Length: 73
Ligand SMILES: [Zn+2]
Ligand SMILES: [Zn+2]
Image (cartoon, rainbow, N blue to C red; front, side):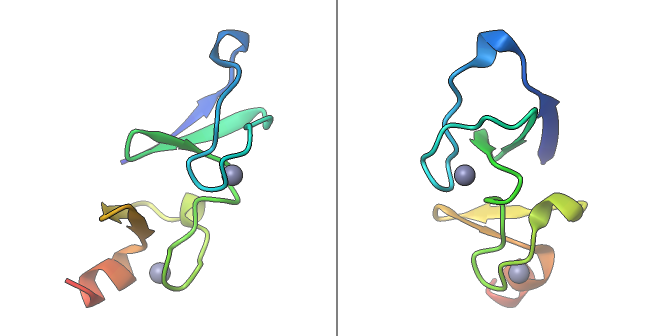
């Protein structure tokens, strides 16, 4: 499940689970219980931007698009 949340002042600082940097964007992505930059939430296999996808998948600390997840099942 992927949520896109508007950032509020009380959320600061937020650390991206992808790159470990602080998220300073106006919006952050909440996926797999972690916060991501929109550009950091990419499939670990094909590196497509998952923010444009309706679904994403999480396994063993890696994120996958639906296509790659079903391929490695
Ligand atoms: Zn990041
Ligand atoms: Zn992929």
